[in-house]
View 1 (cartoon, rainbow, N blue to C red):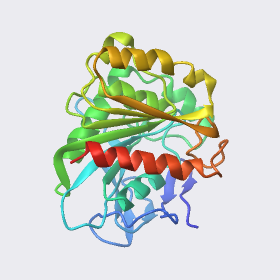
View 2 (view 1 turned 135 degrees about the vertical axis):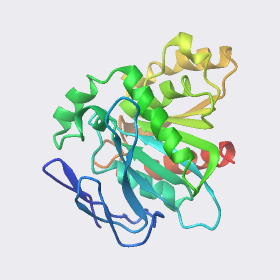
View 3 (view 1 turned 90 degrees about the horizontal axis):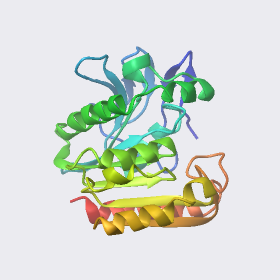
Length: 269
């Protein structure tokens, strides 16, 4: 199975796994990352997204093979920064028919995510909420204007730290069509009233740190008249959708992805 390799902090190759797609871009074959590294891919590309008052945002975009415009999904990475794994999520979503984009939320401040997960975690901890929102706004604006995207039909999905950011971004962007929160914490109580998008939560059974928040956030979302639904997957732990985590080698991963795609199918046009 092809993998994405990292060399001196640069992503050298992205590949489609068995569940990955042929994401659409300018042409099949090798794309070129703006850092100058060749990227082995099919219909995907690395792009730089302009950001007012700051350096650009580096992102990977995967396109589906379809004859009509597609909804778009913004993928928000874990607390470790953009790793080898998130582009494969973009490929998976593109195979399902969506234009998927994953921004490196460290790139506008630090140039790129570091190879070391621990270093990435420390840098993510320095990101101000306003910067994160601005980078997601810029990503939203970019993907919403792509010719292959059905304008205004944009959702998010986030994992771990990114799950919390997916939830929080729904409080800041009333145009968002849907938000998927994979084992991420909820936003502040006062911000929940601003959510317009339906929200789906995906949680591991053995993740009490996050699961302990579910009764309260459910009550707050319902009291505010928001659509919020979630599933807790048995035998799984925090981060189980990513290889190497508890439950990642079991059947709950595909169950969760089927649920996610079903949710997008009812919320995106």
